[in-house]
Structure formats: structure tokens, C-alpha cells
Amino acid sequence: MRKNKNSEPDIKALNKKYGFNVGKVIGLWKSNKHDTEISEALDIDYLDLYELRKELESHYLAPIKSYSKGSIHMFTLD
View 1 (cartoon, one colour):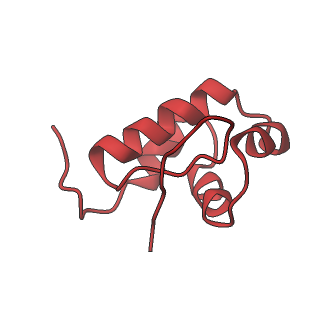
View 2 (cartoon, one colour; view 1 turned 60 degrees about the vertical axis):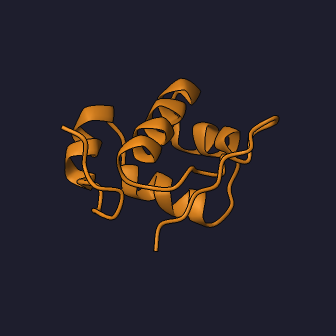
């Protein structure tokens, strides 16, 4: 079931689904870190970050700015 755009993501459920600290990833996105930097720093597969970003965009948020080459997404989480 699709959630409202204004609802908050269930971080605990996302942590369990992806097997890494989603809150930390969101914090790094908010501090303008590149996806490649996040992937290397947290030892997370780049494609898992991409999948998480797409899930957050489609269920909860405006598009995420990924800061990877060729990307035009915008991320906001207040």
C-alpha cells in the first residue's frame, strides 16, 4: 500500500529491509554527501542506495538529490 507523500518513513522497517542504517544514510544525504562516498564509507552496495532512494521518492518524499554523476534528483527531509 502506498503511503501519503507527507507521512514519515518507517526507519526501523527500512533498516531491516535493507540491512543497513537508513537514518545514517538520510543524514549523509542531507549533508550533501555523494552516493559513492556513502557507499564506500558505510560499505553499502551502490545499487542498494539507489533502490532506497527510489523507494523513499515514490512513497514518502520529493525526489532525492543523489550527487552522483548525471543525476538530477532532489532530496528534502525536514
